[in-house]
Image (cartoon, rainbow, N blue to C red; front, side):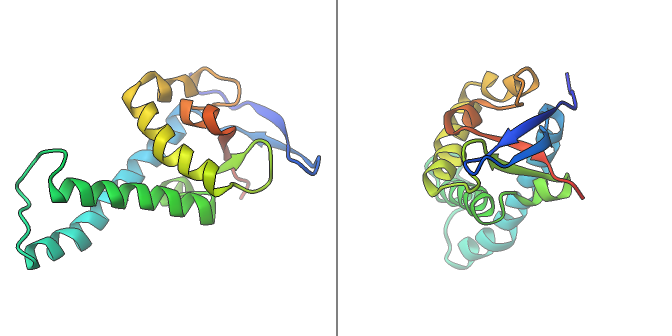
Length: 155
């Protein structure tokens, strides 16, 4: 269902750009790479600290210290990378970036909602990610909530 649609994009200054929206599969591969990055950060930074402090690593409940620390790293990674660079490492590798459809700059509120609450909702309601393949601007549920989308950047 991947299409390479080109469409006009306008921001608040009425500048028009031709953009190519990133479809489901490009976003999926970028997200998988981001999961590898986050998992690596947890293994390199969090686990040694937990071992040093004698905090158990074997618990597998949602409220286990390792689960909480991993979730914090996950959300901090996505929020800060998207806010300051408009892209995560996975998006950088695949030439993608997050854009706000109404303005030129992503606001903190928009980023926090998209990456924290919206991503949780999209992950809970799996169709939240799958709809990327079918919507004209290739938006997931978390993008629809915040008027954002992911586009291909020109190299």
